Image (tube, rainbow, N blue to C red; front, side, top):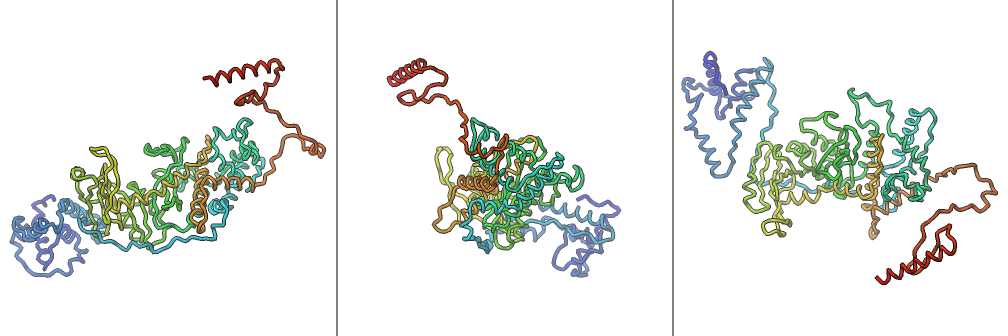
Length: 605
């Protein structure tokens, strides 16, 4: 701290001595003394001080001898005995306190100074106080739902409350683009969804291949004509463009075109009772559309795409999600963007029921763990070292010098949160409000000097994190199995629509497995999605009109001519089974002889 000028040093020393004389047992810090001198109105914390007179001329009272301080000697003895740990940041904190006191005094003037909101953390290497982590809720399973059909499970999420608005907004958009009325029914929208579901199962180069003569797929081609499918795909819409605010205005929504669809699906997902262990993680919906919403992450299998933040259970069921709309699109709190996502997604979790929530280091911080703990939600997450305020753990070199699997820990005693640094191939930091070190177990790892498997010890929090963090990744794996993969050059939001329908099918399948009766065999995802697609197509009962004039009764009763297709000749193992059309008998016999000789020569080889 800068020394006061000669003109004011005497006054400051006298005021400081006066404050010290009023003390009985406890000392006063430099920041408190400056605050008392500069802001005498705010001295409520000094009301209990005495007025005992002491000699202000004694310089040792104001500037004590650092070599003759019994309090410091006691602290040094405590540090040497290991009962407390030394803190190298005290001097910096004192300077910060002085600056804060000065700023409060100068900014407030005669008014009372604002309290310092900075919270000092107390990191100690002590035993973690294990809280009551028993789950105080139960998973509700409706056995009556086991008799539902696959389509009924999917319609719990993609119901008529979702299909009818799609129908209405499609009509509105078609009317805005073309004055001629475009009629579409809810049955046609469901038939369109059924075709999309089949395209995720049976892959073809383009959607027109399903109607092509060479690669015709009867289930799709008979359900709806290609032209009608293209018309619905062209006019498919989910929100009115006229209600969107211009870019740059307050309240502009980047995902206005799909916002109602996202909110309706979210509301239906959150109606399902949650599981005890849930994870928050990001997922990528692949796309290469030229739009600012697209994100790039080189560490993901799909490097380009829309980013969604999802909350999923241990089974992979997605209970809630939110689309990431880039920086600056939403207000950010002091906790950060990632923590805000976790807090918004955690609103659907029952409070004070000891639900466990897992997330990675992009979201986590000590303040977030404390905020969720106040809501009765227990957390376990990886955390970045630069987000641990003043937590001095062992260095990487010291942990690496020991055996693989070594770890160090500290406990923040005020919030009862534990931070563990575990060294495997690289160091990893974990923070938790319920899982600590014990019971310790081992895991198998490949490597080392001998290049073989070895047992590596790990604390309990590492095992717990690895076991329950993969809910969102499991949902991603299930989505990729039969994902709808249509390319749309003009409509960037079609990929989001496909993703939401696929996610509804996957959630319906997971809910079907949860509600199985005793002894009932589970249905695999392929079978359920096939049944859903077939039910959507058959339930539509569309009469696809044929080209040309209507058939009369005589034409209907008469035998219809079958269309002939030229097919290549078929070879049997021993003889020729057919002849090319247009060849006479002599040419056919010559080809038969050549074929027989060729087959005999092939048998000799």
